[in-house]
Image (cartoon, rainbow, N blue to C red):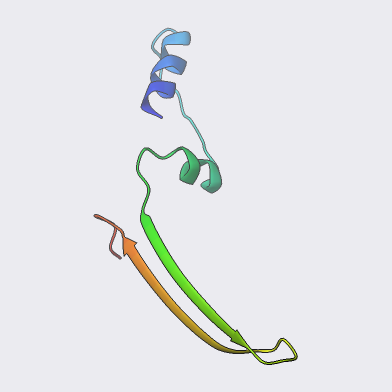
Length: 66
């Protein structure tokens, strides 16, 4: 993202520029991502109704632990 801002600023003679990204674009283009490993087990009865669930999430959130 910093390189895009630099190139945009350079194209307009060094003036300040503002880059806006949607939340989805920000998550996709971020240089670092929060690590997530999930294990999910579901149980259903003969009619297909969910009757049990077991979830394990291992999250490496780095500095963003809140």
